[in-house]
Length: 392
Image 1 (cartoon, helix red, strand yellow):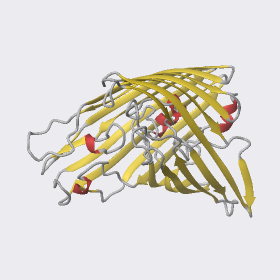
Image 2 (tube, helix red, strand yellow; image 1 turned 135 degrees about the horizontal axis):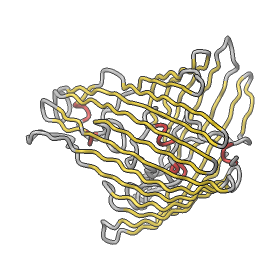
Image 3 (cartoon, one colour; image 1 turned 120 degrees about the horizontal axis):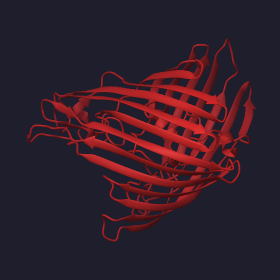
Image 4 (spheres, rainbow, N blue to C red; image 1 turned 30 degrees about the horizontal axis):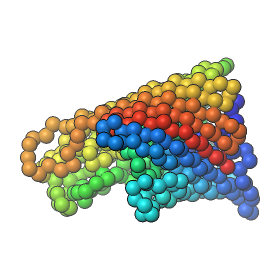
C-alpha cells in the first residue's frame, strides 16, 4: 500500500482538497472532534507556445490544485444523527508574470462552506462544495496532482489539468444534495444546484427560475489483487430569455449532458476511461456563454463531447508512471444570419497528451514531473514541469 493512500482524495467533500494524513492535527472541542488539514504545491514550468512568435516562458506556477486549508468539525452521534461542518479556503502559491503586484493569481478562493447530516437515510449535504457532474472524471485524473493543460504561458492561478481537454469542470457549487446509504458498493447522489448563467456579458438576458439538477451514481468493488470503480452522472438546466441587459432574446437555452467512467486496477496496473456528451455545456464550465447562440427570438445550443483514457503503472507502491490522452469538442450551432446574434458559439477542438511521474517520498511529501503537449483554443503549448506537494 502506498503511503499516500493515507492521504487519499475524499470524493464526497472535495474536488481537490486532500484528506488528512494519519498525523493530521485533530483535537476535541467538548463532544466535537475538530481537525485542520491542508496541502501546498508549486511547479517550475518550461513552456513553448509554437503558435506565437517568441512564445517561450519559464514560469513558476501551481498546478491544477491551489493550496488547500481545511477546517472540519464532526459532532457526537445523537439520536442516530451525526453532523459534519467543513470550511476550505484555497490560496494561490503563484502569480501572473504580466500583472506585477496587481495580485492576479494570488487570490484566496473560498471553495467549501457546507455541512452534512448523516443517518440511516444516507447523507443530506447543504452548502458549497464539489459538484456531482464530472466529479468522478476529475478525481480519477492523474493530472489532479500535476499541471496538465495551461490557458497561456505567463498567467497566474491554477492550471487546467484536463478541464476542457477531456471533461467539463466539476465546479464548487452551492446545493442541497442527498446521498443514499451504501448498497453493496452502489450509491446514488442527487442534488439541486444554484444555476449557471454564463461567465461573460449579456447574462442579464436570461432568467433561471428552476434549479440546476445534477446526479451521480457510483459502484465500487474489490477482488483479489485489484479493484474497480464505475460512475455515471448527468446535469440538466434551463435558461429563459427575458427583456433585460444589453441584448434581449425570447429564446431558451437547455443544458443537458451525461458522463460515464471507469477506474480499474490489477496489481500495479491502472486504467481510467471517461467520456461525456451533451449540449450547451461549454468547454470549461456548464452553460458557459460560448455554448449557445441566440437571436432576438430563439437560441440554439452547441453540441459537445469529450473523453480521456489513462494508463498507469505503480512501482514499489510509491512511484506512479502514467500516460494519458484526452480531447474536448464543441460544434458551433447552425443559426440564421442576423445582425442581433450574441454569445456566438465557436467550433472547439482541444487535445492533450500527458506523460507523468508521481513519486511519494513519504507520507507528507510528493514530487511530480510531467510533460504535456496540448492544442486547441489556448494555442499549441508544450510544457515540461517539475514540482511537488506537502500534505498535513
